[in-house]
Image (cartoon, rainbow, N blue to C red; front, side, top):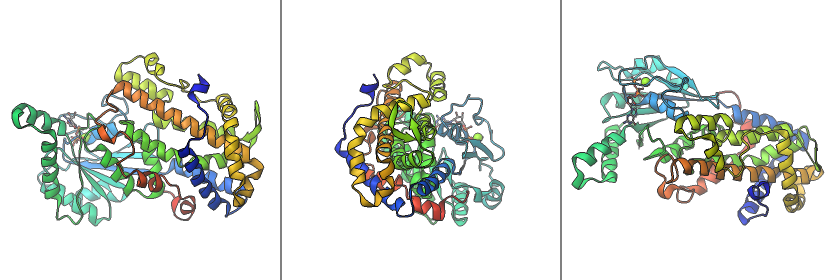
Amino acid sequence: MANEAFPSGHSQSKILELSRDTRALKEAFEAGDLPAVAARLQSTLHALENVRLDIGVTGGTGSGKSTFVNAIRGLGDEDPNSACTGVVEMTMAPTPYLHPKYPSVIIWDLPGIGAPAFQADKYVQRVRLDRYDFLLLVTSESVTANHARLAREILQQGKRFYCIRSKVDVDIAASRSRRPSSFSEDGVLSQIRDDCVQRLEGEGQDPKVFLLSMFELGKYDFHPLEEAMVRGLKRHKRHAFLVALPNVSKLTLQRKAASLRQHIWLVATVACGANPSPVPGVPEVACDLYVLTHSLEGYLRSLGLDQPSLLKLVEQTGRPLREILDVLHDPKTKVTEALVAERLGQASGDASAFSQELLNVPVLGPLAACGLSFATVYWMLRTSLDVAVKDAENVLLQDMPEGGRGRVGSQGDLRGTGAGWWTDQMGWFDWNHCFTEGWRGH
Ligand SMILES: Nc1nc2c(ncn2[C@@H]2O[C@H](COP(=O)(O)OP(=O)(O)OP(=O)(O)O)[C@@H](O)[C@H]2O)c(=O)[nH]1
Ligand SMILES: [Mg+2]
């Protein structure tokens, strides 16, 4: 099972990735020797995982703000940690909701702006606009003067917002049942989008409106919204946001995987350079097993394959855990140091070619002492991540045979979605930039 799950061999694309990561390492090592670089990268890694993100969800009363707050945290409305939702006005004061797996990601459920006497400036003071990285402005109907006023105020405060038109499932169902002969889903969606954009125009920004159903989050405009939100964030916050997103589609999983993949060289350098000790059963490799255990746990958590996520899935779908585990190549949902050592043993054979390649790069002299260890750790992380992504896709397929909890269609992979930008820019981790600009708190 283990050998099948962790295949050997260097594919062309993996070699390309390795050489790009070698360039990143080269830059890192220009700044010092291995222990110094590893210690620095260790604090970078810690900061990367704990960077704070505040997202404000505002908009019309009853438009689905709280439902969105729950959905984006991967929760249903009946979860004990969920925001209250309902058909009567529910949210009266700004309320922070911590992401259940990533508590430094905070989604703020804000009161509605429905009152006829709405005053945008007073509202903005009440909800403390300055604390959010960006806002989501939700409306379930046409954009009104209140939305437009709030949009203007948000922009004046130098904040970014994305407009969400919610409940499009209702519009589609109504149109389908009332006008069956002329019904076109795309027609209804573009009518709604055009109307909202027109009403927001003139607010000083090229308005972007994203159509959603909070009940099927991965459908309609979720992926363009996801991409816009990631692009709009400061670089060092993008990763934290991406890994915290709910696994609603194959495309979201692939975007997460791309971001996690970009940091493998960083984890490998820390694991081999900061506190290395010989790995039991794999004497040719010395590294910090704790760092690797933590990283593999992070992969499972983000991809929804850790125990709490799977138990939640059982609760949400009613499917037995055994049935879910059956589709996993690697059904181990708990990572131990013994498991990591076993994986390193499996990876060590494949890693030697890469190790040679690495040692041929002159500037990587500092790695000479741990060339094979680095290559083995890198390879183990890479293979484990690939297997976890496949497993997460299988779990998703089980739930939604068409490829996601929502419509994926031609967006089912990274092609045709600005993948070049996505993998080269978004996930590309500029470690030096993080020291100069990044990690000073919020
Ligand atoms: N059909 C459909 N119903 C939705 C959608 N989003 C929310 N709802 C329903 O709309 C109602 C109001 O949702 P909430 O999430 O409580 O709305 P809210 O904006 O937080 O409301 P307030 O806090 O009172 O301003 C609930 O009954 C939800 O189940 C959606 O996308 N589609
Ligand atoms: Mg609410």
